[in-house]
Image (cartoon, rainbow, N blue to C red; front, top):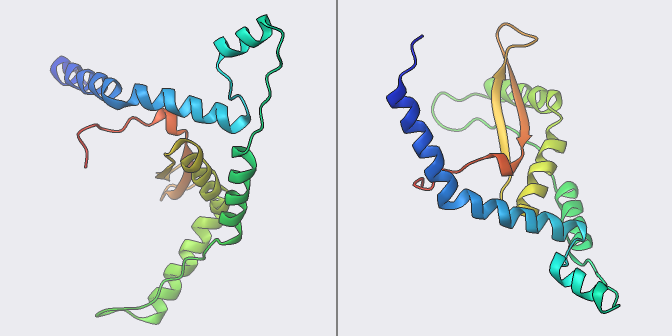
Length: 161
């Protein structure tokens, strides 16, 4: 397949625009949020100055236990997806079949863990993403694959609504 340089350069230009109009600042903020979550809350210059004058640096991490409490509440309050027949042409048999299909997809993808991971990313960094796609590795008809994505690797279109 021939390479269309005009399309490729247009995509590169859009990528650069998206990076410059928000993704770079998000990466800086996300790194700072990750650092605060794990307890690295001092600026390197401040730490160097404290060492120079012989003073200790004390970190009382109130973020980690607070978020751990929120994560526990999220795990405790998980909900199950159940399909109900509503509207014209809907019946209980189809709803029950859809519920069982969803239960199979959720169990095959370890969905409670993936949900918790995406929720934690959203609490810490402000963004959490699911990656939902068809996987043809084990089944020629495809299976639903649900995973979490590192929110630092997702570039949001700055012109999107």
